[in-house]
Length: 112
Length: 118
Image 1: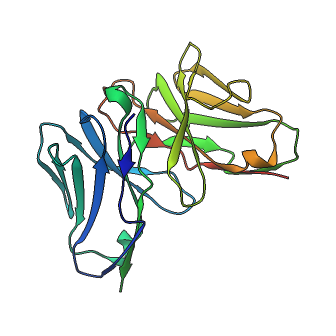
Image 2: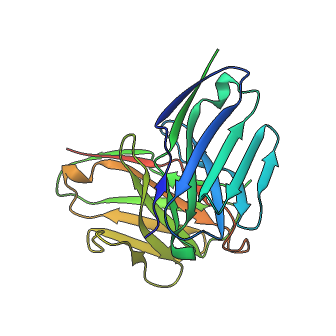
Image 3: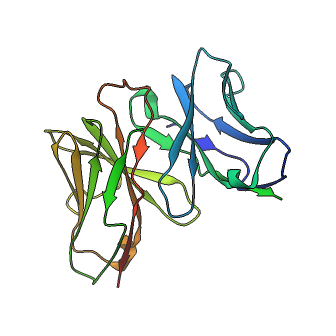
């Protein structure tokens, strides 16, 4: 079955720099991949979706890439701010159907 | 934006009692809702898929008689933890997908329920 690996449990980035988070999957290439933000004690909030035929997607300071050869997605936050500190979750469909599974997440700390 | 309301946000119950958690989509209809469980510093674990008007489908290892799911309308799904035990203590989160959005559309999450069983 599909497994998701977010290789950094925690990441500290200086304010103003670009934060880059990695998501790798182990099995088939999914039809799409999503990124969510989760704050402590709250439910995740959807940020971006990228489809298998897309290389890159941008939204304001966020950028997501999708490399089906490497089985990897990268999530970038440019000009990072302390308010960007949160856990970021990579998600993709299980077995190409509609059930979504999540990675363990990366806790991002933007240092002022 | 799409809002999912989950209640209660926190509940403490005694071992052996049952607890019901409600998940409502406030401004959209959801034929499918998903229930997740999350342990501290761990990933969201999918427990079951709640389908409006039909039986829920449970993931491997999740006891259907322990975690009763009812999806009686397009805007409401409930999860009942029956005969709760301390090991059921966890953070339970529901999510819903807009029925008109297609299977690529994002999940909208409630803010979770922190269950503590004493």
